[in-house]
Length: 88
Image 1: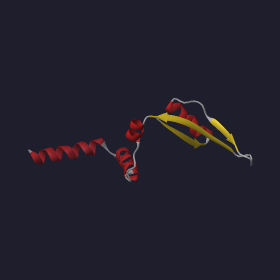
Image 2: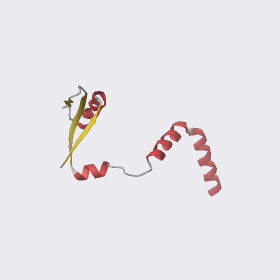
Image 3: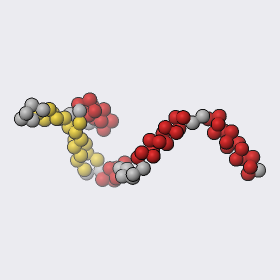
């Protein structure tokens, strides 16, 4: 099992804690008065590696999502029909 500490703002960690099933947000107060928030999440090595994406293709994934948003189904259907006509 891996124990992973995730730190961030309290609102960000509430979202992560809800998704991870862990609702215990730790608060750390520094000497200078700054407050840091963190949660600890446990995961098996297999689950962690399965969900890990180290590819440099992250920006292209965002572009693909944007393309899907701007995609007109009617145009796509027309293009597919023209391809089918060419193959026939």
